[in-house]
Image 1: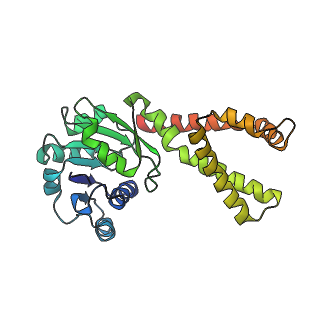
Image 2: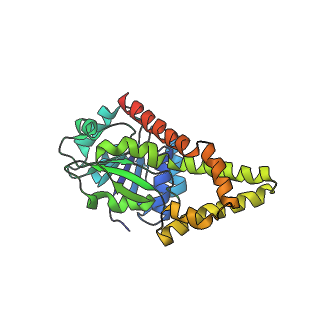
Length: 268
Protein backbone atom coordinates (compact mmCIF):
# COMPACT_ATOMS: atom_id res chain seq x y z
CA UNK A 1 0.00 0.00 0.00
CA UNK A 2 1.33 3.43 -0.98
CA UNK A 3 2.18 5.82 1.84
CA UNK A 4 1.31 9.03 -0.01
CA UNK A 5 -1.31 11.68 0.46
CA UNK A 6 -3.37 12.10 -2.72
CA UNK A 7 -5.54 15.16 -3.24
CA UNK A 8 -8.07 15.34 -6.08
CA UNK A 9 -9.18 18.72 -7.38
CA UNK A 10 -12.40 17.72 -9.08
CA UNK A 11 -14.59 14.76 -8.19
CA UNK A 12 -16.19 13.85 -11.52
CA UNK A 13 -16.67 10.46 -13.15
CA UNK A 14 -13.02 9.86 -14.10
CA UNK A 15 -11.79 10.92 -10.67
CA UNK A 16 -14.33 8.58 -9.08
CA UNK A 17 -13.25 5.69 -11.33
CA UNK A 18 -9.64 6.16 -10.25
CA UNK A 19 -10.58 6.48 -6.57
CA UNK A 20 -12.79 3.39 -6.75
CA UNK A 21 -9.99 1.34 -8.33
CA UNK A 22 -7.16 2.38 -5.99
CA UNK A 23 -9.31 1.93 -2.89
CA UNK A 24 -10.72 -1.42 -4.04
CA UNK A 25 -7.27 -2.68 -4.99
CA UNK A 26 -5.89 -1.43 -1.66
CA UNK A 27 -3.28 0.60 -3.50
CA UNK A 28 -4.00 3.55 -1.23
CA UNK A 29 -6.13 3.64 1.90
CA UNK A 30 -9.19 5.89 1.63
CA UNK A 31 -8.05 8.02 4.56
CA UNK A 32 -5.04 9.13 2.49
CA UNK A 33 -7.26 10.46 -0.29
CA UNK A 34 -8.93 13.87 -0.21
CA UNK A 35 -11.25 15.48 -2.75
CA UNK A 36 -12.51 19.00 -3.39
CA UNK A 37 -15.29 19.81 -5.84
CA UNK A 38 -17.68 22.73 -6.34
CA UNK A 39 -20.60 20.28 -6.10
CA UNK A 40 -21.27 19.63 -2.41
CA UNK A 41 -23.62 16.73 -3.16
CA UNK A 42 -20.84 15.09 -5.16
CA UNK A 43 -18.45 15.40 -2.22
CA UNK A 44 -20.98 13.84 0.14
CA UNK A 45 -21.43 10.95 -2.26
CA UNK A 46 -17.68 10.29 -2.55
CA UNK A 47 -17.24 10.50 1.21
CA UNK A 48 -20.13 8.13 1.92
CA UNK A 49 -19.29 5.67 -0.87
CA UNK A 50 -15.50 5.43 -0.60
CA UNK A 51 -14.59 6.97 2.76
CA UNK A 52 -12.34 9.65 1.28
CA UNK A 53 -11.80 12.96 3.06
CA UNK A 54 -13.90 15.91 1.92
CA UNK A 55 -14.48 17.81 5.15
CA UNK A 56 -11.48 20.12 5.37
CA UNK A 57 -10.31 23.16 3.45
CA UNK A 58 -8.56 23.05 0.10
CA UNK A 59 -5.60 24.80 1.73
CA UNK A 60 -5.15 22.02 4.30
CA UNK A 61 -5.45 19.27 1.71
CA UNK A 62 -2.93 20.97 -0.57
CA UNK A 63 -0.45 21.45 2.27
CA UNK A 64 -0.58 17.71 3.08
CA UNK A 65 -0.55 16.35 -0.47
CA UNK A 66 2.27 14.43 -2.12
CA UNK A 67 0.31 14.08 -5.38
CA UNK A 68 -2.28 16.63 -6.53
CA UNK A 69 -4.59 15.20 -9.18
CA UNK A 70 -6.10 17.88 -11.41
CA UNK A 71 -9.39 16.36 -12.56
CA UNK A 72 -11.34 19.34 -13.89
CA UNK A 73 -12.49 20.41 -17.34
CA UNK A 74 -10.05 22.19 -19.67
CA UNK A 75 -12.31 25.26 -19.69
CA UNK A 76 -12.25 25.58 -15.89
CA UNK A 77 -10.15 28.23 -14.17
CA UNK A 78 -6.76 26.52 -14.10
CA UNK A 79 -5.05 29.82 -13.31
CA UNK A 80 -6.92 30.07 -10.00
CA UNK A 81 -6.10 26.44 -9.17
CA UNK A 82 -2.47 27.08 -10.00
CA UNK A 83 -2.38 30.09 -7.70
CA UNK A 84 -3.76 28.01 -4.82
CA UNK A 85 -1.27 25.20 -5.45
CA UNK A 86 1.70 27.55 -5.58
CA UNK A 87 0.52 29.27 -2.40
CA UNK A 88 -0.26 26.25 -0.22
CA UNK A 89 1.33 23.07 -1.62
CA UNK A 90 4.87 21.91 -0.85
CA UNK A 91 7.34 22.59 -3.70
CA UNK A 92 7.96 18.84 -4.09
CA UNK A 93 4.25 17.99 -4.40
CA UNK A 94 3.68 16.64 -7.90
CA UNK A 95 0.86 17.63 -10.22
CA UNK A 96 -0.91 14.73 -11.91
CA UNK A 97 -3.11 16.20 -14.62
CA UNK A 98 -5.88 14.24 -16.34
CA UNK A 99 -7.18 17.43 -18.00
CA UNK A 100 -7.74 16.68 -21.68
CA UNK A 101 -5.75 18.72 -24.16
CA UNK A 102 -3.76 20.85 -21.69
CA UNK A 103 -0.04 20.47 -22.33
CA UNK A 104 2.73 20.20 -19.76
CA UNK A 105 3.98 23.60 -20.87
CA UNK A 106 0.59 25.17 -20.11
CA UNK A 107 0.34 23.33 -16.82
CA UNK A 108 3.79 24.58 -15.81
CA UNK A 109 2.64 28.13 -16.47
CA UNK A 110 -0.20 27.62 -13.99
CA UNK A 111 1.36 25.39 -11.33
CA UNK A 112 5.05 26.33 -11.40
CA UNK A 113 7.86 25.98 -13.91
CA UNK A 114 9.99 23.84 -11.59
CA UNK A 115 7.24 21.69 -10.10
CA UNK A 116 7.04 17.98 -10.98
CA UNK A 117 4.24 17.62 -13.53
CA UNK A 118 2.85 14.35 -14.82
CA UNK A 119 0.32 14.44 -17.63
CA UNK A 120 -1.86 11.32 -17.64
CA UNK A 121 -4.39 10.09 -20.16
CA UNK A 122 -6.24 7.51 -18.03
CA UNK A 123 -7.57 4.32 -19.52
CA UNK A 124 -11.28 3.62 -19.24
CA UNK A 125 -10.86 0.07 -17.91
CA UNK A 126 -9.92 1.20 -14.40
CA UNK A 127 -12.12 -1.35 -12.62
CA UNK A 128 -10.52 -4.31 -14.40
CA UNK A 129 -6.81 -3.67 -13.80
CA UNK A 130 -6.29 -3.87 -17.57
CA UNK A 131 -5.70 -1.11 -20.08
CA UNK A 132 -2.80 1.31 -20.43
CA UNK A 133 -2.75 4.89 -19.25
CA UNK A 134 -0.52 7.15 -21.32
CA UNK A 135 1.91 9.18 -19.20
CA UNK A 136 4.28 12.04 -20.01
CA UNK A 137 6.67 13.54 -17.44
CA UNK A 138 8.33 16.93 -17.30
CA UNK A 139 12.00 17.29 -16.43
CA UNK A 140 11.29 17.60 -12.69
CA UNK A 141 9.14 14.48 -12.38
CA UNK A 142 10.19 10.84 -12.23
CA UNK A 143 8.43 7.49 -12.41
CA UNK A 144 8.97 6.70 -8.73
CA UNK A 145 6.79 9.66 -7.72
CA UNK A 146 3.72 8.40 -9.51
CA UNK A 147 4.01 4.84 -10.79
CA UNK A 148 2.63 3.12 -7.70
CA UNK A 149 -0.47 5.30 -7.84
CA UNK A 150 -0.97 4.80 -11.59
CA UNK A 151 -0.62 1.03 -11.36
CA UNK A 152 -3.54 1.06 -8.94
CA UNK A 153 -5.95 1.59 -11.84
CA UNK A 154 -4.30 -0.23 -14.74
CA UNK A 155 -1.02 -0.40 -16.59
CA UNK A 156 1.29 2.39 -17.73
CA UNK A 157 2.99 3.39 -20.95
CA UNK A 158 5.42 6.32 -20.69
CA UNK A 159 5.36 8.46 -23.79
CA UNK A 160 6.90 11.51 -25.30
CA UNK A 161 4.20 14.15 -24.94
CA UNK A 162 4.06 14.53 -28.72
CA UNK A 163 2.43 11.08 -28.84
CA UNK A 164 -0.28 11.80 -26.26
CA UNK A 165 -2.98 12.72 -28.83
CA UNK A 166 -2.27 9.55 -30.81
CA UNK A 167 -2.41 7.49 -27.65
CA UNK A 168 -5.75 9.06 -26.71
CA UNK A 169 -7.44 8.41 -30.05
CA UNK A 170 -5.99 4.91 -30.36
CA UNK A 171 -5.35 3.51 -26.89
CA UNK A 172 -7.91 5.17 -24.64
CA UNK A 173 -10.65 5.04 -27.28
CA UNK A 174 -9.62 1.45 -28.03
CA UNK A 175 -12.30 -0.29 -25.92
CA UNK A 176 -14.94 1.47 -28.04
CA UNK A 177 -13.80 -0.42 -31.12
CA UNK A 178 -13.75 -3.71 -29.20
CA UNK A 179 -17.23 -3.16 -27.75
CA UNK A 180 -18.58 -2.36 -31.21
CA UNK A 181 -16.96 -5.45 -32.72
CA UNK A 182 -18.33 -7.68 -29.95
CA UNK A 183 -21.83 -6.28 -30.36
CA UNK A 184 -21.68 -6.80 -34.14
CA UNK A 185 -20.33 -10.35 -33.84
CA UNK A 186 -23.06 -11.32 -31.35
CA UNK A 187 -25.68 -9.84 -33.69
CA UNK A 188 -24.23 -11.93 -36.51
CA UNK A 189 -24.78 -15.06 -34.46
CA UNK A 190 -28.41 -14.07 -33.88
CA UNK A 191 -28.82 -13.29 -37.58
CA UNK A 192 -27.52 -16.76 -38.40
CA UNK A 193 -30.08 -18.32 -36.07
CA UNK A 194 -28.57 -18.70 -32.60
CA UNK A 195 -30.52 -17.54 -29.54
CA UNK A 196 -29.24 -14.20 -28.22
CA UNK A 197 -27.80 -15.60 -24.98
CA UNK A 198 -25.90 -18.35 -26.78
CA UNK A 199 -24.53 -15.94 -29.38
CA UNK A 200 -23.45 -13.53 -26.65
CA UNK A 201 -21.67 -16.20 -24.60
CA UNK A 202 -19.91 -17.67 -27.65
CA UNK A 203 -18.77 -14.19 -28.73
CA UNK A 204 -17.30 -13.30 -25.34
CA UNK A 205 -15.57 -16.66 -25.01
CA UNK A 206 -14.08 -16.42 -28.49
CA UNK A 207 -12.80 -12.88 -27.94
CA UNK A 208 -11.33 -13.70 -24.55
CA UNK A 209 -9.83 -16.99 -25.76
CA UNK A 210 -8.32 -15.41 -28.87
CA UNK A 211 -6.48 -12.82 -26.75
CA UNK A 212 -5.15 -15.54 -24.44
CA UNK A 213 -4.09 -17.60 -27.48
CA UNK A 214 -2.12 -14.66 -28.90
CA UNK A 215 -0.42 -14.05 -25.54
CA UNK A 216 0.38 -17.70 -24.89
CA UNK A 217 1.66 -18.60 -28.35
CA UNK A 218 3.24 -15.21 -29.13
CA UNK A 219 2.29 -15.85 -32.74
CA UNK A 220 1.24 -13.13 -35.15
CA UNK A 221 -2.53 -13.06 -35.80
CA UNK A 222 -1.84 -13.98 -39.43
CA UNK A 223 -0.08 -17.15 -38.30
CA UNK A 224 -3.10 -18.19 -36.22
CA UNK A 225 -5.38 -17.36 -39.14
CA UNK A 226 -3.31 -19.65 -41.35
CA UNK A 227 -3.56 -22.45 -38.78
CA UNK A 228 -7.32 -22.03 -38.34
CA UNK A 229 -8.31 -21.88 -42.02
CA UNK A 230 -8.18 -24.95 -44.21
CA UNK A 231 -8.17 -24.60 -48.02
CA UNK A 232 -11.65 -23.88 -49.31
CA UNK A 233 -13.04 -24.21 -45.77
CA UNK A 234 -15.64 -22.43 -43.69
CA UNK A 235 -13.32 -19.93 -42.01
CA UNK A 236 -11.61 -18.66 -45.16
CA UNK A 237 -14.99 -18.11 -46.85
CA UNK A 238 -16.07 -15.97 -43.90
CA UNK A 239 -12.83 -13.98 -44.00
CA UNK A 240 -13.25 -13.41 -47.73
CA UNK A 241 -16.54 -11.62 -47.11
CA UNK A 242 -15.02 -9.65 -44.24
CA UNK A 243 -12.22 -8.51 -46.53
CA UNK A 244 -14.81 -7.35 -49.09
CA UNK A 245 -16.47 -5.24 -46.40
CA UNK A 246 -13.41 -2.96 -46.08
CA UNK A 247 -13.30 -3.91 -42.40
CA UNK A 248 -9.59 -3.30 -41.77
CA UNK A 249 -9.42 0.05 -43.57
CA UNK A 250 -12.66 1.18 -41.92
CA UNK A 251 -11.25 0.45 -38.49
CA UNK A 252 -8.05 2.29 -39.32
CA UNK A 253 -10.02 5.31 -40.56
CA UNK A 254 -11.94 5.29 -37.27
CA UNK A 255 -8.71 5.47 -35.28
CA UNK A 256 -7.37 8.31 -37.43
CA UNK A 257 -10.65 10.21 -36.99
CA UNK A 258 -10.43 9.82 -33.20
CA UNK A 259 -6.81 11.02 -33.18
CA UNK A 260 -7.74 14.00 -35.37
CA UNK A 261 -10.59 14.96 -33.01
CA UNK A 262 -8.28 14.69 -30.00
CA UNK A 263 -5.87 17.09 -31.66
CA UNK A 264 -8.71 19.51 -32.47
CA UNK A 265 -9.97 19.53 -28.89
CA UNK A 266 -6.47 20.13 -27.55
CA UNK A 267 -6.04 23.15 -29.84
CA UNK A 268 -9.13 24.92 -28.47
